[in-house]
Image 1 (spheres, rainbow, N blue to C red):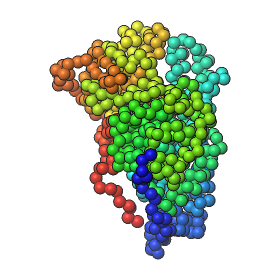
Image 2: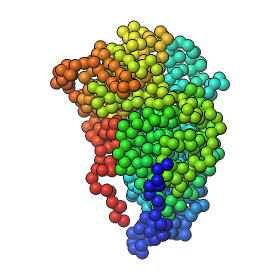
Image 3: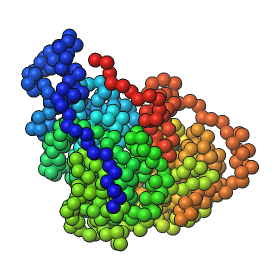
Image 4: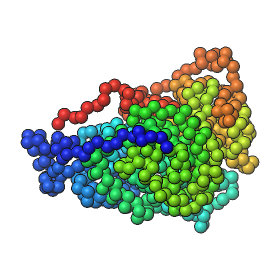
Length: 585
Ligand code: FES
Ligand code: MG
């Protein structure tokens, strides 16, 4: 393994050097106000004086089922903080529920990131425990904490228990799509469908397939921001309570050690995150979030880093939808992420520092795998190489993404006529028409679904299979859009086309009947239209009308970057302008 180049924590801090001491320490009128208001809440000075004040950024809400347990789990975090001699303060933040927030949570990831950064900046806190897990909350919290750069530790919500329907396991998302198609094909009854509805989400916690939530929490751990093994523990397991308390104890020490995110989130740490994402058979969303996270930490990670890792690291986590049968609960019993990381240790930089205060290599020391079918060996993988592929060509000059590990392999090389839709409602109506003029060789295309066009890249990318084809027995076809898709989705879906059609990317010029060709082995995607014809179409192209003239939507569309750049706001990037200073107190 490469030499130890990771930064080490500085010497221990003194109480007088705590950030919060600027609020509480001075013998002046302003500090008098801070102290008297703490006493107003019933705290005696002995409870906070000279102690690290720890913010617990909690993304609980009554409309966030994946974080329902955070309402009480936060007390376990507080217990840990108090035990270690810290002073806990809970700061609620936007809960960004994947299930309820419309038009898409991706509109609000950056808002949570800004909220987290500014919550930490504006309050008298020395460190932070970040409580998240439902898809966008993990990157949202981490982006903000990275930019603020005070010691921070992430507590993942943990996956929910396996779903159950008539004694069969159900997987979040994946089985909704599967049984919905079966219902539309007339293979199951309405009653069955209601059974699936009641059984698919049996406990609090995040989706228990390898969706965006499980991918992102694994990434957070691989990048060093979660205590060892923490990202695999099911939400309803008592081990999760212990993780919460332990994270509370640990953050207090991290403050004394001044172990900040910037010291942990080095380029090799992000390369580890990418390798683990590949080995887990990750959600395509991981690409966007990881690029944004790395860039906030000042590391220039791009699509090519994913492409390189994908060619090296096989998928060994046998968790649906890339895997065949298992769910996150099985993955935990099989040895969890420590077991998985141990199996790909040759692809990891083991000298990276983590929130445990130890290196990644030390964190996985002694890890074991208890079920070789759930966590495979690298010579018996679920998918050998290229579980995710980045394609480029005249349809997507800045790249697009496909997930070969979770699709019908006959579409890896395919040419077919495009059937193009400009908006989701008209496409949805058309696919339900049993007389639609379409074959399984067609390429179903949706545009205006990108970062600005969606807006926010809704998870529309697994375009619904046309009813006519379902009845003919087809379950997959080539689909293409500038949208994202849920990590629990599957199918031959080309996603994240950049630049997006709404701002005039070449996808805007495609017409129904044009031949679209993809060749995953060659990493290419093309529309078979001459350059002259494309130039003619470009001259005729009329930009769509502006969608937002005020409010957050306006800020969003003015400043959102393309998928290939991580969809961060341009003004939040680390290299944008001068650093933000500490507030005047
Ligand atoms: Fe929250 Fe899937 S809906 S993790
Ligand atoms: Mg999801």
